[in-house]
Structure formats: C-alpha cells, structure tokens
Image (tube, rainbow, N blue to C red; front, side):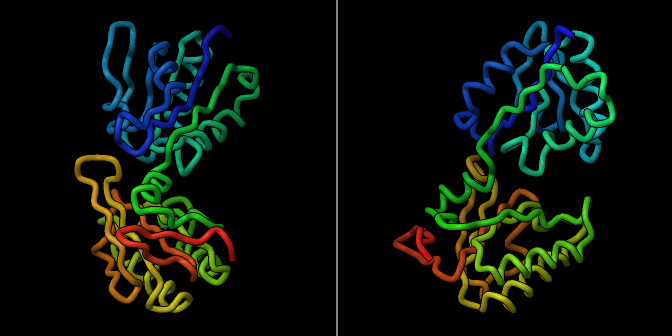
Length: 243
C-alpha cells in the first residue's frame, strides 16, 4: 500500500494555531475528508479533492478515508482542535479495527491545539492543576453517565473543561449540569464561558456558579470550571499549581 492517512487537528479556529506539521500534510494530500465546516477551512488547489460530509457520520467518513488510502491516495481527515479529543482519531481506529487487512497502512495522528486549552490560555490559567475534560453531549453515551462523571469530578475537586454543553435539541441538560455543580461545588466557584475561541467572535466571560445561566453556553462554547482554589488575579483566572 503506497498511500497514507493522517488525522489532523486544525486547532480552534485561528489559522495561526494550525501546526506546521498539519500544514505540511495538507500540502501533500490528494484528498481531504471531514465535516463540512472543517473541510471548508482547507484552501482548494489543483490535485486536491475535498470531501465534505455531514455531522454524525464519523464511521462512514473513516471507512471512506481508509479505502482511498489503501488505493494509493494521500488522505487527511480533518478535525477541529485535536483529533484525539472527542474527534476523528478514535472513530478511525474503530473503523480500522474491523479491517485487519489494513493494519499495516501508513497512519499518522497529527495533534492540534484544543478549544479547551486555547480557551484556558485566553482566560489565564484555570487548568493550572489537575483537570479533566467531559463531553456533555449524550449522543454517544447515556445522560445518566454524564451526570455520574460530572458529580465525581466535582467531588474530586478537579478543574473541569466541558465540550458540547448545550444544543438546540437538548437545552435542558446544561441547566441540570449547573445544578449538579452548585450542589457539589457551592455557589462561589468560578466558571468561564469561552465562545468561538480564537475567532473574531470570541467572547470570554467568567462568573460564579451563582450567576451562571444555561443561556451563557451553546455548541460553540467551551465551559471551564475551576477547582476550590481557583481565583481571579486582575482580569485573569488561575488555579494554583499546588493543592
């Protein structure tokens, strides 16, 4: 098999945050595959075919990429942020697991800057000590599991980063998440809403859990919750390195 397959993270939005490694792979690629908005971030050029597809077809997308690469194409699957964080790298290996004949295919995972880490940097250093990331969507896991993990993370005093906090199809779930956080963390814990990080529409807002409302978040928002030691310093929020 002469083709190769890379799964690349395009970062949170600003083109300056795309790594040189990812740029090099895109420059060499014959095919780019991904969710429509992510593929749209790749500039068309001669010799490159762009394959945009809808959301929630990750396995079909991975199978398509594996087939093209096995036929000799140089394929890049694009994700936003980092491809290993709630993105396409895991979906690719899920598809590959069912195709042992392709185990020797040249496959590379190219890391990117996550929305969570970009948001934390723009807010200050709210993830400066132990932290965890939780996807609040229940598309691939039951909401009961989301609640369980959220409650345990809060009890363990982790700082937390939340992806996919609130969508039009499940607006009530983030309200429940805030209730759990208030129960476990108290009303004075700092929570940061970082919307459209690194784009012209970026908005960073830090409030206490007492003042947080579900409407502060949408699907373009990363939510960061501090631990019990997280505090403000001027316009920034940070979590001390020691416990």
